[in-house]
Image (cartoon, rainbow, N blue to C red; front, side):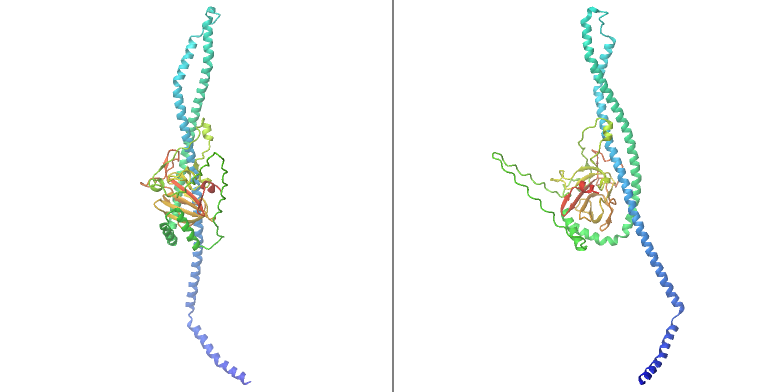
Length: 464
């Protein structure tokens, strides 16, 4: 009981103090101040929501810009293919026209002699036996001459008519192809202007993000300064990526060593054949000082050996295997100058492919990937390395300008660079002329590597 009384007394003593404290707080709190704080909190929340909405809008706009870039670039490259195809057809038609014209000129004198002989036979026919039966020998001789000459004249006349018809078809096809080329060039120029505007828009956006990409760009530049070859650069990039990125898949070991070929059984009296020397692998950028990839000077495109077409229809229906098609997976449209495994400039065999293209042509990412390196490398111009999710490295060299930045994720078909004019001097120009045999212009080197080994780009990029 005493404990209860003490407890109640203590509680009674505390109650007034607590009540006074609550009233003091209530008295110190200004309703206007409370409303101001609540208004500021609401304004901050509104700003946060507006920023979130703005961020989503910017991201959606950036995604739309990327898709427009891909779509417009695809149109540009499709028009490039049309221009190049028309150029190849025109080259073949022009060559056939020259050959047919020269052949007709060469046969002009022969045809004139034959026509003169026909005129003489018509004006001086052989004597008839009924009129001059005593001139049977002359009549027989004339008949023999006619029997030998007329079929030959008829055959030559038919052949001449075929050649004239063929020449007429060739000239008609030339007119058609020139119109196609003119239309394709106009379409290409229009889409190129649209692409240039989109690229300028993206470049402005990238400048705003340049501070964020500065660290990755500096890392790539440091690796480039230390590397002495393309192989070393890729190895350094792989080590840097492995050190800074979590492991998302099991590490791939080196490819299994090939089984040794069985030794041939020696035959008595026969010398053993010498083993063929293993082709020396050449770093594609280790080229002579006067190499086009080093100096940037235009490289002449050799004519592709092919059987000469006979008719205009054959030319129009003939395939164009020497053309590089971006629609087939390659990063640029043009003409394949050097294929994988062919002799390289510096000796040995080529570890990639060389494509002659037009000035100002867009270069696209052939596969989805991550930009591992972008910038100049060892005096060989702008170099771009795209790393794919499968562990492949796509190397692109010879561009005048790289429009992608290190650390950027790119989609297949997205523009990553622009080809130059093929000359180390003079302003950047954009051409709509076809890339035909015998012409010169900028060249793009394409190489694919995985685990240090090269892969045929034409085969790998052709697999969609």
